View (cartoon, one colour):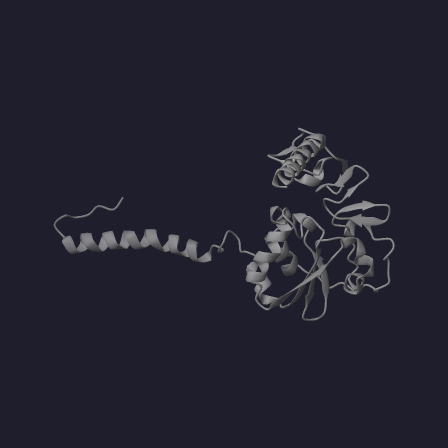
Amino acid sequence: MVKIDKKKPFLRSFLIVFLIVLILIPATQANSSSPINGGGSSNASVSQKCGQLIYFCSENAPCCAGETASSHPSYNAINEFEQNSGCIEVVRHINSDFADLENDDLAKQYRVFGVPTFIFIDENNCTSRIGNGCSTELTDLEKGIANSNCINNPSPDSEINNPPQNLCSGCHVNDSCLSLGFRKEGKYCSENKLMIIQKQSEESCDNSFECESNVCASEKCVSADLITRILNWFKHLFEQDNTSSK
């Protein structure tokens, strides 16, 4: 233990400063050597890569357009990424119907069988498929680009009629890739990439396509009969107004 002679103020001040310096130097070195943002964000890696990010989507896909689009991570991810994409050009390739992807030349070139799909092409024309369909987060895009590896561009005509299941971002049914929310024969394509039977009235729901009536309100499926009665009530009301105006 260091003893300070009170009769020597200069020595006392020197020892106090010396002890403070000994305490502060290790802390400063620790801070300067520690990584920024908890180990480093992929933003730095993304900024070092240039190229093109093609976003394949369709006007009739729930996580691409419509009232429910903003509730899906992929919709927000591409918007956020585009705002700070650096030297990466974002190309939005939107067709009218995802079921018509097999007739889309660009989709055929990159073997896109479902939407949304994200294709990154770097400066060396190396192509990588990144993201995870409707569940794609901004970090998925950043990490996908940072860790992108060169793969061969597939032949435009290869495997068009038999898309591999692992490339389908929706539900793989009978050699077809159905988008999230697609309804068929009383079932809908779920976020788990499974066709699930539509729900009855009063069952909990997040999206209208989950309900047999195709109407979800206050997180519950609305009865088709109730909708019919409401529509008939309005119809009867308008008929009365038309009759009284004559």
